[in-house]
Length: 125
Image (cartoon, rainbow, N blue to C red; front, side, top):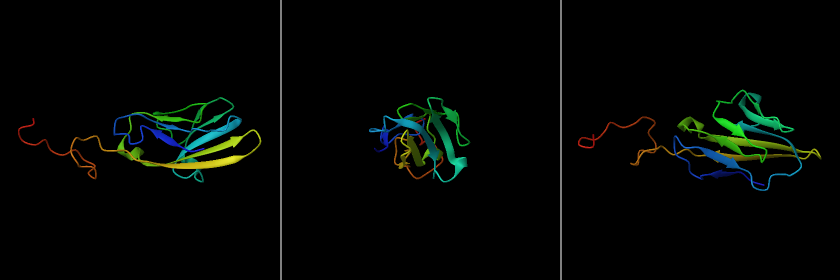
């Protein structure tokens, strides 16, 4: 079981789905966190028994699915973070997975490390 972002290198403004191939079929509950699962205020969403519940860190742009996947819509640079998935099966087996999500700046040039938009170059207007 692992977390696979689709697309693997999303750009600012795009949607990304954190998919979980090989998720347990006897899933009881799962929870997604932005950051470590040890901090309850980082909870994005959880899905116990088919009922999806938003957590304190939920921005309104995240949607959880029964397949454990998490859709994050209209990414911003601040969405680049570690995401943690915690699953519990009907047998009580708990598993925690993490993925480091990178969000690329949506610019045609190589200003990847700048958080502000550059001034338009003369003549490109």
